[in-house]
Length: 125
Image 1 (tube, rainbow, N blue to C red):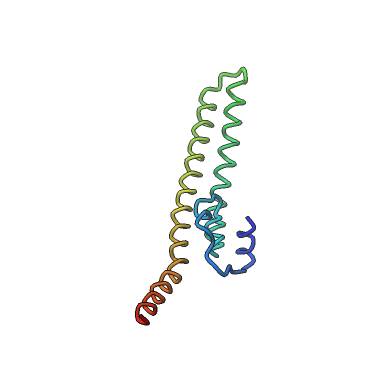
Image 2 (cartoon, rainbow, N blue to C red):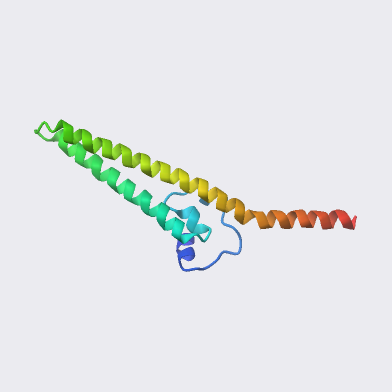
């Protein structure tokens, strides 16, 4: 989260962040590559979906333990919980894919520099 905080403040890192940041949830891949708007979108959707899923699951369990036979309402809350859990998972997957693309773009200049250096070394021999 420290990296994400630096990105929100507009500070840039000298080197691309580590590959491990690509698989982090809550928009961290986007924050670590300087894409704070995307980070807020991915992080916000994931946090809202997780919060809704937890609330819906708790509500469904409360209805299941109550004496009322509110089967339809309990089923509705279970469906809401499942759907929002799926939304959180899909948003995390989209964040990972976008983060991997950003990471590849960040590494492209260093790969091009390595190829140029390789040509310089080959020419000097």
